[in-house]
Length: 507
Ligand SMILES: Nc1nc2c(c(=O)[nH]1)N[C@H]1C(S)=C(S)[C@@H](COP(=O)(O)O)O[C@H]1N2
Ligand SMILES: [Mo]
Image 1: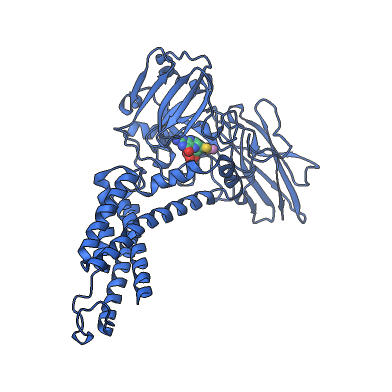
Image 2 (image 1 turned 45 degrees about the vertical axis):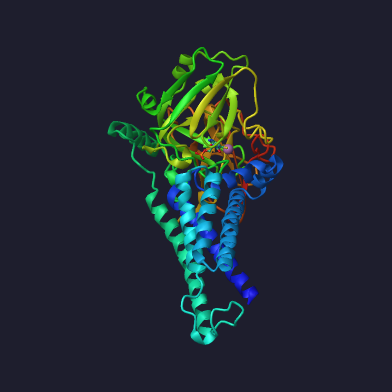
């Protein structure tokens, strides 16, 4: 009997823990007030740098799934332990409501302590208490044949069934609640709002049309065009949970070695001269033929005039940029001055995952310089490492030149020929040429390229069609606008970005 009760209580406790997490999510969504968020942050922060780097190189995005799963397990376990104690209390006092009340109170304290909001913590407390109240009720109508209320007496079959039903009911209720919460919240949270005023989104739409008409006619429609759709644009974040920052609450402060500190609000920012720029981003952590390379049309304003207005004075001529998620990166003020503060992406509001409401775009430099959810620019006297530099990367410099050949870029045409197509990127140096070999590097031909664009920092598409004869060793390499050919020697992404020529067997 005891074992059965323990099992039953463990099941109920796990259900209560799940319900608490779901309730918190219902109230907060994927924000820093969600109870799993601080635990996930702690796991990420406590993981030693070499392990983080190793995970990125070996499991890539799956690494996120691992730490997030750990965080969920820990938090469900914490609330589950509280509920387990609550169920015991119910049994001991023979009053289920005592256990439920205690579970609610302690869960509330725990949620408030974890995510720091007494009001939002109620979201976790109520569902946990409810599961204990429902699941922990003593049988209400004991079978008279069972020989009275004596706790040591063998309960009648009817009472056992009632307990089982209630347990299953509580567990099913908790799981149903969790599922409904996830589905309900997801359908609420869409952030593809069109840019506030029509002329602005029209300007972005026009730039998108220009990109479209510069693009090559490529047979494979799966291949991304000149602009990546928002949903396809790659994502790299240090935390699983995107900060949710309302435009009305956002501001950017210039601090440190300035002639005059300055804070800029969102309304002030979007009042400044507006531009729509095509800017390509590439992550230093991606594999040679990886797909953390994308392009979009961004709406925003140049940083230089703002920077000049605060009169930067530090000895290193360098600045530390910080985001609301705790991310930070440091690089020269000269480089920052070329940058752009963006609040729109492909004619929409900047989506949460890409830094809503405002991010930085630095021409020609690795992705990590493009701080999302930007909150502070600190002018320094002495250089300091950024988040990734502390973890062994050297990814604040200019991008390496690369030509990609993704799976979608290899297509057999109706006439039997093979079309090879892809993207090439060299930051502000631009792409001058893409060379393709179909014999393992013995001979080379120039690929066709998309029309050059006026934007300083944008990729080009390339396309090459050939008549296959058995299998071919295809090699592609780009030449940048300064005449430098892509580095031939292979290297891993860490620490300065992958190099080498993409090679694929085709046919
Ligand atoms: N605040 C913040 N900014 C950030 C990051 C981050 O984790 N937090 N990741 C950086 C990295 S490593 C890259 S490659 C780019 C990716 O931008 P995206 O997610 O919009 O593609 O954002 C950069 N900016
Ligand atoms: Mo990155």
